[in-house]
Length: 507
Image 1 (cartoon, one colour):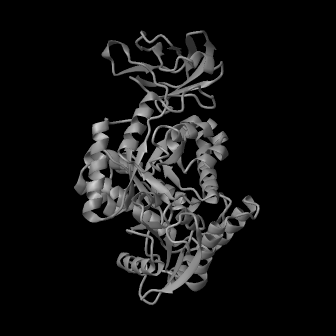
Image 2 (cartoon, rainbow, N blue to C red):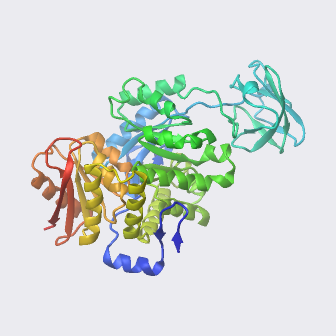
Image 3 (tube, rainbow, N blue to C red):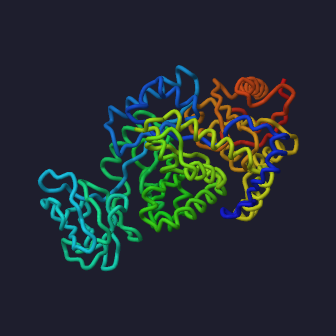
């Protein structure tokens, strides 16, 4: 079967995969796993378990929890790394701009809305909600929507159709019955909202992240390239070297995706709000489009939301969830993400182990040689044949690993850019990034197939290669007598000077 939906041919024939495994032993998972940390997983012992199971990135969801709580996550992750010496990156996920309904009258938890009844959204913050009205946090709502538009509340569980708007109120008809609770999220599918890219809370949270040296900011509800630039220009963000992962969660973000991708360090396919903001039948195609474009650009992409959602309560996922994870890997995602499964689920470690097994099994049947050929052809066409010396060397390193049957690609890199170039061409073997920068060591953990080795200095290329091969043997990446491809810059210690390709024998 040849999957053409992403524009890249990936053969997944069982017969072909069997012959592939005989030629190249699949020794390490390529797809990284991002785990959301909650109260039950926020301790050193559990974090060590999660890392041993396959976690590469610990995500802090700033929609919930206080700064002291998130500081405890940071401290515990670092203590776990110090204890087991397995690297783990830290991701700060912002709450972002949002629209919410107000509180209900009489301390009620919910009110029931009947299909066909009239319902009013008001700007008057003194109004307490009931079966006929509720206030919202978005005072521009009457000027943003128009008759015929749809308003969705509580992840789309209740739908409203706009009938008319006044200066302060929006009059609607309830399209389906349901319970309206306190302070629920509001979505306006297909409507361009006038909300700030970065809220005051986001600025405080990002300042906290800068102070505590997080590795990534997952920026919520990115709608334009200017939104990304605004975050990058916040005090300390660029100086700290923090990478910005833009979360695409709206129609506007999709429409501006090409420009957003150019200024972002990576993308998160945030299917939760995206599945409310656009018709649900379009989510799969949007996912494939974003992953494909990230692959062509050589930028990491994370696929997120409800991947193993049933494992919040049960020890096994549904067949559909397992297939969803596998399809994301086939599409070309660099990372897959767990949210409630590890934040507040009953089976956090089992969820990571299950996701690890699904990714590993899926990766075994990908035809990496044809994938490389297809990717290179399309990248050259997209870049009109103009690629840098560094990227050309990295592409050649992947081809050489195929031609010689090498078991490992070693990359000597300070910035991590060379690693991303090698990962871009999807090698069949692991990539070991040798770097003297701890931040780089953590940040390569969102690039497919990449693993870090932190060293004191980049001086002495031959000694670094020997050290890297010994470390790779400990990890089971390579065995004595197998070939290793190395790419680096001949100007030792100079970032961005990749122009050397070398083949070595592991002793």
